[in-house]
Image (cartoon, rainbow, N blue to C red; front, side, top):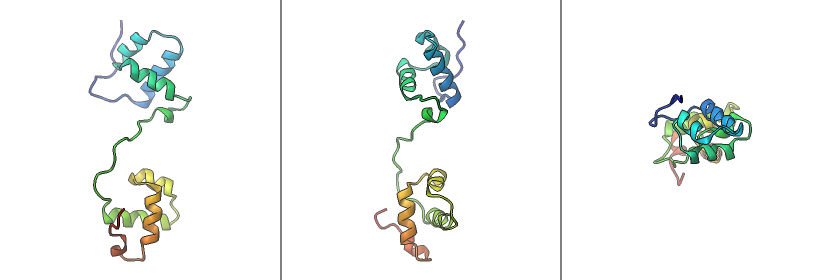
Length: 121
């Protein structure tokens, strides 16, 4: 008897995705796996293609574009941290901004908040 682990309204954790892919790669019946995890066969196959042995390969990719502009106070904080030697990659993940935006803001910043006002980016 199969037990559903997640409901359709929730996202699977990365660990559950890994479990599903590993079961699939052990030649378990895909229909049973999909039923157990309440997922579609296409999701299972997509995860199977993406899975490279690391959990990060199954992390959700953010496909949504940011709407609006990053607030000035966030830009200021990011530039200050960047100038304190926090890496662009870390800051981009924490604040959900692109590394190129951080570089651009750093070049624009002259010590005043006004210098960080949106000028096409």
